[in-house]
Length: 346
Image (tube, rainbow, N blue to C red):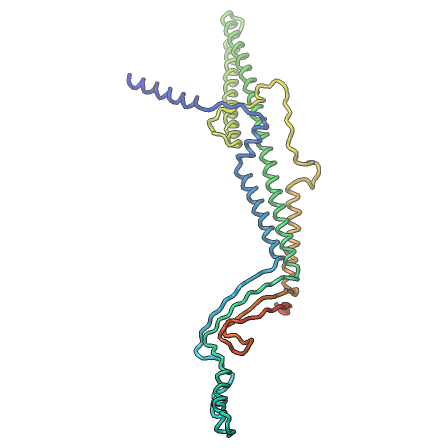
């Protein structure tokens, strides 16, 4: 008794969960919109397109000047000396070698030694440099074209995935409508066979038909029921596939707006260009851009054998400074120049 009650409650619980699925009726346009908004691969394609867009912007910065700052400190054991030890000694004893009354030549020599002392044991330097590319063998222009073509390819890939998604949604949608019509046809056929089976049974009872005729009808009836089961299974699978494409819960009781229509229904395809024009296909556009990218890569490889020219400018300062003798303070100067690199053997 308890086992029967448990089985009954379990069956009731399963039935209640099965009935919890939301019944939703949607049209083909709604299916397309849901699939486009919820498709993760399509979102990834748009993100790749956005990434290619920023890569193209980053490539454009190669045309702009580069500014860098450099700082340096160095401690050395000995300072740079402009005079030798013998010369220093000679200056210190200049008064002993040349006697001029009233003129302290030894003191003047010491002052001259101190004036020529560099004191470069503690050296500090800093520089700000600007480099403006003028001609880099064409590699900057080629790289910008490559990133531009890559952005267009990413856009074509997104368009291709969008078209494939719409085609898949449409195929699934009309397959469900077709299976629904087949189900109605199979159910009507079963009713017809059941009526025929009832009539044949009466004819057998009256002696106007044989049992073989009755068995033939029952075989047809069983075949029709098997066909109905197959159609129901296919319909359930296609509904689940549509839920997956639309991003809905798999238990959603999905109903399509065209399932119960008696006449043909026409839905316009999105404007994807003239499909009869071969250059309108995203696959062919991607192939064209890939060929152009390879051509630009050839130019980049060729640029390694061409000279490069850049304009340089900046400001540099040091301590000790040498712009007004050797001074223990920061002092600097500006500079401009042109840098040319010509490869000879590579």
